[in-house]
Amino acid sequence: MQSGRAAPNAREPSLGAPALKDVYDLVADDFAAVNALIPRRLTSDVTLVAEIGNYIVESGGKRLRPLLVLLAARALGFNGINHLKLAAIIEFLHTATLLHDDVVDRSDLRRGRRTANALWGNAPSVLVGDFLYSRAFQLMTELDSPAIVKILSDATNVIAEGEVEQLASIGDIDLSETRYFRVIRAKTAMLFRAATHTAAVLGSTDSDTIAALRDYGEAFGLAYQLVDDWLDYAGDPKDMGKNTGDDLAEGKLTLPLIHALKHVGSADAARLRDAIGARSSAGLTDVTELVKCSGALDYTKAKAAEQAARAIVALGALPPSRHRDALHDLCTICLDRIA
Image 1 (spheres, rainbow, N blue to C red):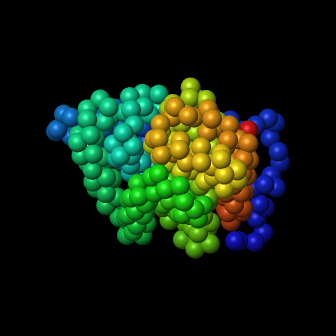
Image 2: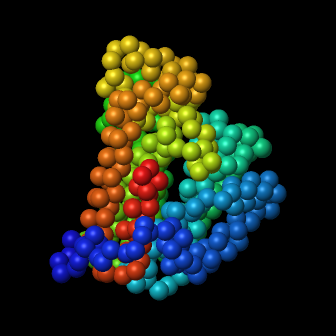
Image 3: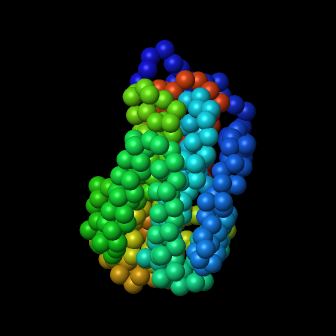
């Protein structure tokens, strides 16, 4: 970490909680350019490819990962246009994983809309996901940066491994916290990490700065997933764009359930194991009550706060700027989802 720079948590406090809209507004022009670039690069002579691709890309997501690219690049003073292409690449990679995830999970709702596989079927969804991966790699070549290509290709490989490991752990009541973190680090945090890492490579040649933004992305991604896992047991479906209890219905053991299994009595643990084995959200009310009574929600929230704090510390290697402050604010906004 470079010396002589104030840590982000030492900045003057603002009035009120940070707002996500203010963060987006800071890079509004860049974001508009990315939103215009994405459909231009999503064209295909195959009608179904364009139809499904546009449906999923325009489905109302926050595009948080591209936002991190733009903020990180601007925080380092980058003034070119390659950060726009990089943001589109990250969005294409993310969208491809969503298409594949929904097929594997047999999901029929995402972001409050029907999933592509529910509308068009599994095979077209998987193949369009493959198209998005290939289009992302086509765009990568235009950046003319072997370092960025390596980071993104390595990340894509790790994400795929994380997907497989999560699939292999479905219904595993002995899933350890260590293995859980390995899965979410690979499956979720890796793309956040790749977003800020590659943006840092665009904007800096300083190894400490690049490492700091890499670490920020990973820690923020872990915090984000932990919050998501907390919300699956205590969130509002209207705010989430999906049903609570989806993880339980799919047999996924996330941190709240892993912690609860280890901190309830034997009879209650047996009830939890039965609910996991049933692969249904029918017992969600009982499971949620046991999760709450075990302290698992508070434990998960604390773990999310730990990762958010780690992300904020990493920002100390960056020069003071509004964009660095916005990266800090994103950590607060993330945790505010479970305040």
